[in-house]
Image (cartoon, rainbow over all chains, first blue to last red):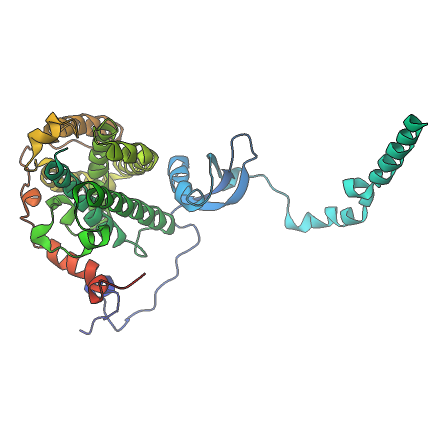
Length: 131
Length: 251
């Protein structure tokens, strides 16, 4: 039987059959573990921000694995994990609820031209004191 | 300061960290699930970092060769690692059990070293404390998961791996050649005291896993004196293959 010879010695040592007899069956989604959503906090007091998910059998393992997936670069002070099933969400079909939101500029802070009024007031009051 | 005694201690600790780091890294890309593969590889990198820091201390304080030379230019008979870390990775159950038993010892050892009379060692101990804590947390969580929260097969496999690993784990506490000097000078607490604390901590952390602590007292000694299993030299050959092509290369 011919075995697979790889430049990775670990693979060669496995003595894998070079000729695949039967095609590999793809595994069904989530066939072993559920997923947990991970929230990352960079500084004490900062918001926990959603950063992705991990596969795990329970909360303990999820937190353990989240530490290396999402906490090994940069600054971290804390992590949360939440079972994906516990996330209550809107349906993608309801996205039209938000369709006209971008038009409602009056709801944006930037839509108010306050600065001009403040400058005018400052100028006016300065003139008032010099007189 | 007794530099011969300090170098002996550092070689034992650093060689353990280096060899186990390499063994752990053999799982990279082949781990049981993606997340665990990444976590285990990351732990391996930490261990490599500990080894490097120890070789650097030896280089500075004891006049030993530079870290890369110390790590990559010695053959088995000059290594001071325990047989425990030399063993092949086996199945994941064995690798996890070894990770657990080694990391409890590592935690105990470094916690005591934070009081060492050798300030650079004490400083390093305080610096890596958080890493060691995570390694221990990782190891114990898996022991409990597969021992108490898994199924009959996972429990049986972990118990059998524990029994297989035990005499080798005890071999970690084989004393070096300067044991009394190390204790007298307050450099470390010595192997007997380390083993005692290790045993108590293993029992405590394993309790929720429902796995039994093996009772055999036979220990696999020899590594600290340069006598090794047949597994070490082929591993060193593979680990140092690229470095030895051109030891003067700049990376």
